[in-house]
Length: 320
Image (cartoon, rainbow, N blue to C red; front, side, top):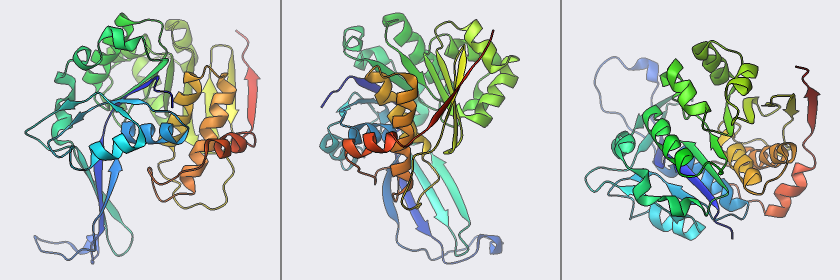
C-alpha cells in the first residue's frame, strides 16, 4: 500500500451510552443508571486515515496522544497499516468525546480534549523533518486549533512549497479571526468546509468566495458541503455541483463529511482531476451512510470506484 499522504489533526476516543431517564427532568445533583458504554475511535484525523486505508492507502498520522494510547489505539492503527508520527503526553489522557443519550433520544455531547489542548505547543519539525516531507504527495491539516493550524501550515509551506495542502476547519471556524484567514488561505491548495462555515469565513474576511481565488493564488478549490446531495466545488473559472453517491440503506447520515474528506485527499494524492476526485469522495461517503459509524464501513476499492461512476457532476463556467 502507498504511504504518501500525511494527515495532521485530532485523534480521540468516543464513549457512547444511554441514561435511563429524561434530560428535561434533571433538577438537582443525582445519581443515574446508564446502559452499557460503547467505546469507539473518533477525531477528524482518525476518521480520515481510516477512510484512506479503505481506499488502499497507508497514510501517516500526526497528532498528540496521551498515556493511554499504547493500550488500544496504537495496535489498532498499526493493524490498519497507518504510519504514526505522534507527540506523546505521558501525564495526560488522549482526547475523549462523550455521547450521552436519554430515553427520548435527546443527546448531550461532551468534548474533553485532555492532552490535545497542548497541540499548538508542539514542534512538528521534530517528528516530521523537511526531508521526510519530500515523501508526501499531499498533506491534510485540520487540527481544530487555530494556533496549531497556522503554525503547522507555515512550517509545511516554508519547508516544501510544491506539496498540495488540503485544509479543513474542525469545529473552530469561529475562532478564525480576519487576519488568520490570510495566514491559512495563502498556504493551502484546497479548502474543505461546511457551507455555513464558508459563509462565516466570507463575513470575517469581508470578501466573497470568488474573491479568495484572486487574493490567494495558491488556492485552487474551495469545496463547500451543504448535504450529501449538494456539494459544490468552487474554482476561479467554474463551479461543479456534486450529487450524492447511491445507497442501499441509510443508517448513519450524520458525520459522512470525514469519509468525503478521505476520498478527496486520496484523489488529490493520485493527481486525479477534481471532478473525478469529488465523485470518488461522494462514493466513499455513501458507504459511510450505510454503516454504523466512522470506522465501520469497509467496501473494497473496486466497489468505491464503481459507485463513483453513478455520482453526477454538473459544471458551470464562470465568466470573469
